[in-house]
Image 1 (cartoon, rainbow, N blue to C red):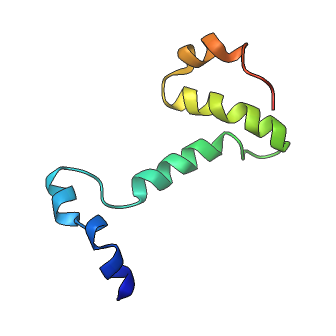
Image 2: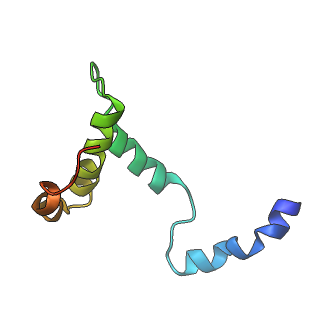
Length: 79
């Protein structure tokens, strides 16, 4: 009961629905699944550094911002 009392201001689902906003986690879960798919295919193994360096590029491709990222990529330090 305390959880619902403490988080009441964030649970205005009727207002979210009226504003045509998603109230479920399906959209986020689907996005995470698609993002992960590139890194978890059969036989793929990534070092932490390799995955860390590739994550911004995967995000740029999925967000249709690859051209913007590639313009500055040569200036980024390798992690």
